Amino acid sequence: MSSRGAPIAGLASVLLLIATAAWPQQPQVKKLTFRAVASVNGKDLYKAYCVYCHGDDGKGHGPEAAVLRVPPADLTTIAARNGGKFNAAAVEDKINGWQLVPRSMKEASARVDAMNTGKNAEDVPVMPLFGPLFAKLYPQEVRDRQIRMANVIRYVKSLQQNPAPGEEAPKK
Image 1 (cartoon, rainbow, N blue to C red):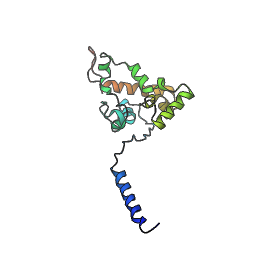
Image 2: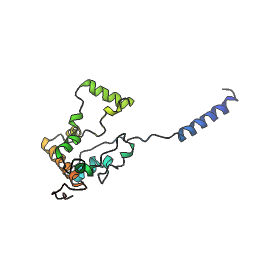
Image 3: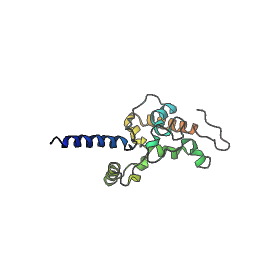
Image 4: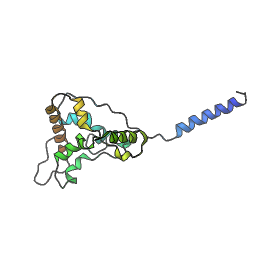
């Protein structure tokens, strides 16, 4: 390189570094690694698996919420959004995610493509599929997983802002 080209190359490098530093960075979702927890207490399970997105109070303001393409649901208003009724079976379906599991290789491939390219991103589930995750984390008895799921749901029910008419607010 000529002696005249070196200062230009150096200046270009500095400008590139400044431009890169000034360019707004897109917030990234951390890759969360879920681990099995010994407790079967609903609050403990919530803190281990749900708090990242839904927050301590269940209102959807967890530490990862700001970077998600779809804001997490406010878990304290489930009953209010359903005419005052907390439908535990519907909540379990949402947590398990079994209805969202790809049913074919084509569907699975389309999801992977959407995750890698961002095209058709609306086809990618936002919430982790905890049914398969719990099956992996807790491979022992199915009953053990059912107890954990029931306890998480009971805890989420305890977060409801207003109990249905004639119901007492669940104890936390």
